[in-house]
Image 1 (cartoon, one colour):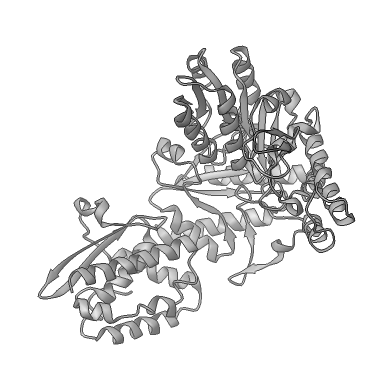
Image 2 (spheres, rainbow over the protein chains, first blue to last red):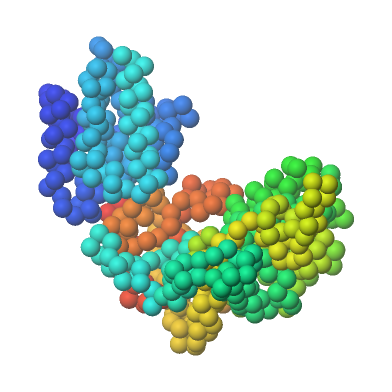
Length: 146
Length: 400
């Protein structure tokens, strides 16, 4: 099962995105993709209850998503949580890709990875909006710290 | 008979269990819409030419069909709107203009859809009136004893849902109406779900307003009905001004058309409204014992399966008999988010509703952020219900 965060750390962002796309292409059935996201969601731990504040809440999701970050040596370290496990898997996938990178790296991504793995088109509109909000928030944080 | 039901989603046969949000349309309804659009498309009531006459007739025949369906005493009491929401807003505005003063009171219940809360809040804000709320108990029943405390000599109107879209319990509206009438208070009944599952006789019920949506009742979307007692509709000023709703217009003074036109300003959604007639003919077919028996069996099966699962909590639990419960089940699963469940069920071909279901006060009442809702229509089958239960179990296992 996937362990987010470490596997992609030695790759460039582009390589990491391609690795995710490869990994997702192995799952033909949607339920298998969900199993994968559920495991990813479970692997995301240690988000403090005290950081579940409104300023960290991402709007536009049916479920609640909190995204926090800190900057270390010019790299942005993300942490997140959600009350729904599939959504948590999605944010886990995103921060697995973008956490530990510089804001320049993050801002250089076109985030087309979410379309290439079919997440955007196969989630309901409200859900897709949540995804859009998550990406917007990650980009916003990268922008603030550029 | 229902073209959409034979389609597949994600390669699986569609199981449509979101009927309380909108029902599917029989071929006869689709045919009527197509016929008006392709053969008789012309603005109703205005022109003398043939097409306009045909469109007008189809539209007005729907009014007769709705009058029969609700057993209204005359066709002037049937106003066409764009849906339940529009109907409630019309009453909240026009009734408020005619009858509400500062300090007056309006009663709603804790079980209402946002559409039967927000228009009254707006009305109260406009008029400086006070909104009071009749609570429900833990099983989802209205606490009727409290109504006596809430009713005062300042109460001007009460709005209550016939059947909550979340709880699926048939409310004792007749008793509520009697209580309110004894204090001279008129009652609006939200029939968005009630008209689908109960035989409604507005004269017998003695409600002052009854509102419903066509799209939940097998008709085209964008259609709705406001039934109102003539004495109130006559006393209420128009909601919107425009074409059709006028008698004579001059810049000094305008007089209004008689009922029902007074409340039907502008070009109406005539192609869709004309589908009320075939839709209600379909509803009449449903009175067939066999079909009713089928849906009752599905309801009982789902209730048994869901309530025997200790992980599941149902909201709106019938007491003793199943007669007061419609085939609509809102529930939560311990430790599982409703959104996850509905996403997984979707990929299994099952359409259910998840979220707050436009009833945030109810969600707060039960301390949840949302629920999952399965609602069944007469075209659903027992096989679908069994498949749903199987898939729900599998989805829960994936998530726990």
